[in-house]
Image 1 (tube, helix red, strand yellow):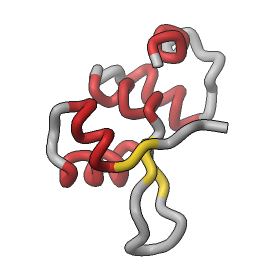
Image 2 (cartoon, helix red, strand yellow; image 1 turned 90 degrees about the horizontal axis):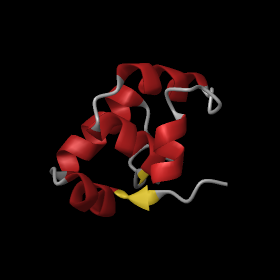
Image 3 (cartoon, helix red, strand yellow; image 1 turned 120 degrees about the vertical axis):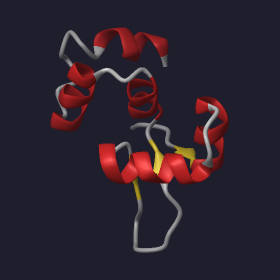
Length: 78
């Protein structure tokens, strides 16, 4: 199970605004909401991939391919 983090925690980690984190959740699929208007919960792995602008890793991440070579460096870093 993935330990997800709050929008505020993700914003501090990435040094961006909470609005940016919420936008990344919608654009890149790095977070989940249990219901509309409920708090976002962010996957730290997805956050690091987006912060690094790694398109190959993001594509593998969104496909659920956690064994992809592009993702391996991020898994060990988080």
